[in-house]
Image 1 (cartoon, protein in one colour):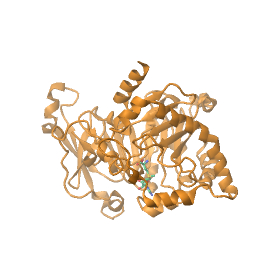
Image 2 (tube, rainbow, N blue to C red):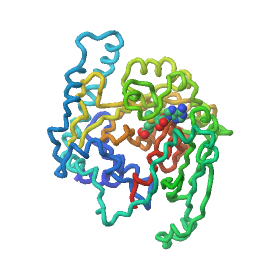
Image 3 (cartoon, rainbow, N blue to C red):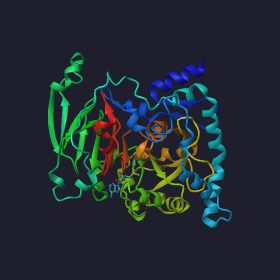
Image 4 (tube, helix red, strand yellow):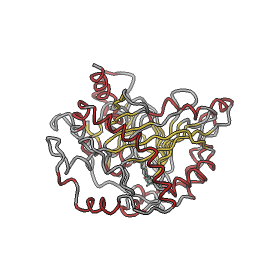
Length: 424
Ligand code: SAM
């Protein structure tokens, strides 16, 4: 019956907690987690997941042999651990060997959870039938926020928020909400756009529709404008700061998914100034490259005033529960790492922070990767480690999506809020 309870709670929350493991291990369905930010729309699983579902897994959920394309077979042969390792590769391998047993154990938990594995195969299906679903109609092609934000007309671009007038005051009128809304037209770039109401808001920009979660805001700008988010009073700074920087690396260049920045740019991120006077928990996504790890440990965290506390490992699996690649594949590990640390605030509560890093433990999140190398929404798993009053103030830097109660900053925070990722 414990398994039943775990499964029931997973179907509601999107988070399955394995109870039989020494380090905390969870399996996450990002779609279910994201859906908790919405009440009238749903994130569409088929647009969230497609890499590990569309071509590889047939309707019966069976993984086909074609899954290993010839190119990845070649890669596998080529990139097994090189026979002789240089100094940096040795250091990287040592790091890997340290976490390897823990990751294997976590994966074993998943493989042992037969009922959960059964659910995994259907995660990409939209549970409601197509007939029941109403698409949020959208016109035109998706605009490139990156390009529009750069042109001289950028300050003139506006977004229209359709804020339901009845929201909160009269539940029964929920269905008519669209007919009763106040239109607010505000600049879309270099401006804090806020949805303060307790319900999502539909927005329009260049004849596309976007969904803005309840009590969330975004600031769409280049790095040069990030200082506009620094609070005038540190007492209203952020308690949780999640950062997924556009690190320079071979694969990001290859795929040209977004522009990257040299490491020195991240040294100037005003982390301390964004932080709350009670202190902040800082989470930084890093790649497995040793050179980057060294930069973070020796330069970046010290320059931000961040003390390392623990790591969260994101283990990537396919719909059949197998790892997305061989755990020992040298340049394509099936896991990524979120480094967690504390940044002391200037307030009285900050002494409480010292020592907090000692109580924090490593944790593992297993999930099926979404498209566009999206990171899973791990914010919720970190809540219990966040200093200061609760609910905490949270911000994601270099965000491409929005979450209820969070501030999203980056040059394309509306990217995954486009209506084609949702249905009613
Ligand atoms: N965490 C995100 C997710 O899971 O979808 C991915 C973030 S991605 C690694 C980095 C983001 O930083 C991209 O959206 C990219 O466009 C943005 N970016 C790159 N250069 C930037 C700049 N100069 N100012 C602001 N954002 C920038």
